[in-house]
Image (cartoon, rainbow, N blue to C red; front, side, top):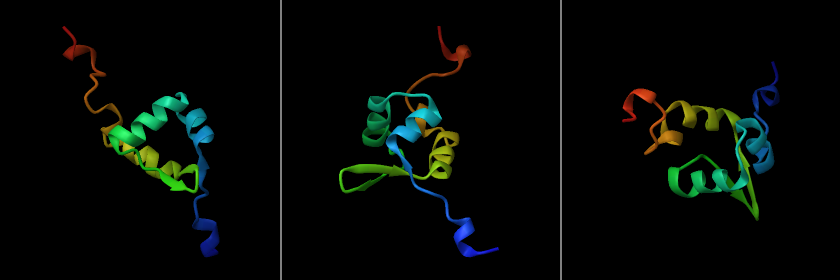
Length: 73
């Protein structure tokens, strides 16, 4: 297998929005406040989907937000 086959393509902000089903402002807030893995290339944001998936699984996306019904009064 060629080394190039293992390279993951960079995703755009719009592609990440569609992938996660969230709005642009939410992505930008997650970058600013929750350390969402993102890279600024000039004026554009670029992402690796594998890094975003890992970040979500780590629980950082829901930091400070209760997503479990049991914890709600």
